[in-house]
Length: 132
Image (cartoon, rainbow, N blue to C red; front, side, top):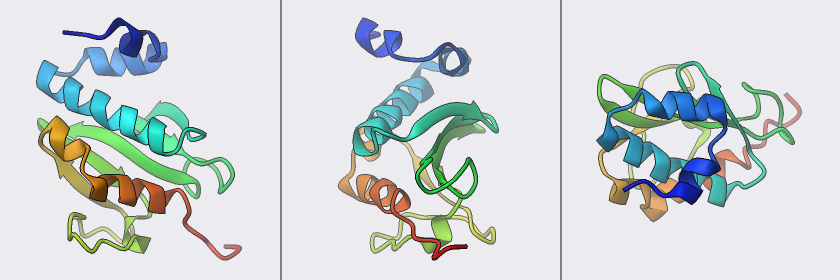
């Protein structure tokens, strides 16, 4: 069952993105969205590169200040970190072999709520680029 409050707080471009998702994926994406917004409430949300994208303007724009992105690829919900290679990952959740980008596959709403996921989001919001 959809929460009217949850749906009303979604901007129209994000609502269009969510509307194109299968129900199960949409529920996981909405749970991740709630967690990102609660963890870093000042992060800016846009629909970019085929997903919900979050960046931290106090660090930089959509690339340098990239916090994370929620995407659905081939039915798999992913929480992606453009600067994922810079994140400590003691739980070994991060996947990927790109130069910098890493992701975590999120299979259930319960997975989205894991403390390790919140810790990765918090870390991403505080990356220090040392003036770069």
